[in-house]
Length: 460
Image 1 (spheres, helix red, strand yellow):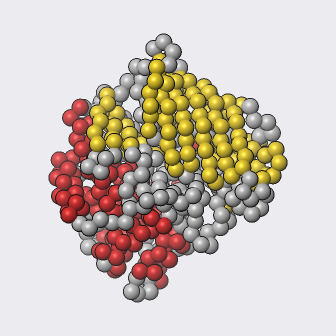
Image 2 (cartoon, one colour):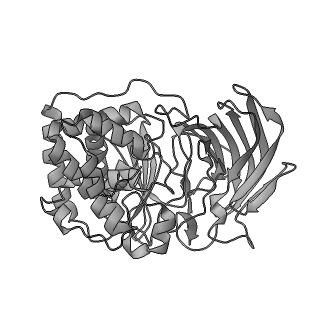
Image 3 (tube, one colour):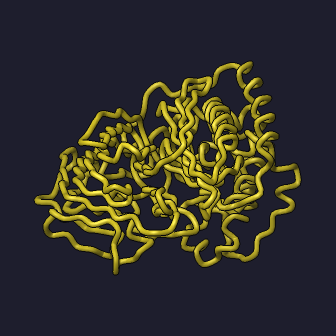
């Protein structure tokens, strides 16, 4: 997510991007991943992450407005850890806004469940699963999107369904990750999964979504949109009478821009051009964008500047926010992390990637950075930033991107570029950790980086 305002003018951004892409086109090709690591892949020492090899099969029918959905969800998974798995946890993040008194996401048809709170549902398994064994959950699902425009919310005829579908919590060497919801950033931590989602909706509503969609006639006045998404950490969609513009990047990525009435056609067109260039620029640096399609939903009423989901981003007409959210397609989407316990691993990296596209982080950025307390760390979890929300962006975005620029100056331009491209490849569809990144950086550094990590308070 990007919260800040005041990005550079869009014309200037497009001019910078045109120059950048001409340079990238003339440069030798980088390493582009040709395959993918299994869901739950890891660096040595991280321990297994489970349940893995997750599949979601979902069928939902909306009401006339696109704000209420009813249907079924089937979740398949495999136990990859050595210990028997006796239960799994579902995260119902859509319930965080309205609270437990009026849950927006409700499940029925599973027996024996225990709700730790309305965003966490423990599901005992019929029998413990041993390593290599698979299980399934089948349940009826109802979603009633609350009023108020948000990453999960609605405003008039327009509905945003980010974090609407239940996802599986992750069990790793630190135990189950059942962290609370945060509005300041993200709490999300999921392994890459496959989704097959059928959305039955009024034909007058467009439903931009994660993945690739095929539309077919439904009942009278309705359309069936069957959406397939492979190796993604979440699935999001929107519904409304959007204005749609489409295009294709030079690398062949199909891009749809879906705008509400407060976004002009000219603004939408210029954001489409920006997305076309930015997605290819990030691909050139970190590995080719693997999903084929991208949906950008524009609404100037969002309280945030931008929010990312795999293949699906929400934005105001803010150029730097769009470039930042597209960088998240790699830094969290493809290269995953625990966003609650280590938010810097996606926010700092996405902000750094944004600077590389748009220009930023002058030579004195490290000198200008100031720590406000002894316990403040670049690697602090969201529990710290929720207690100190005024410091979140200054540290995780500003100082975090600055630290990566300083690392680039220390290692050299080419070495830093190779480091990030190779690191992304090594963690493609897997999970990044601070320790893994530090080890990768040290492996290519001509000097001991211990002092650098201390200076920038990168622990772990």
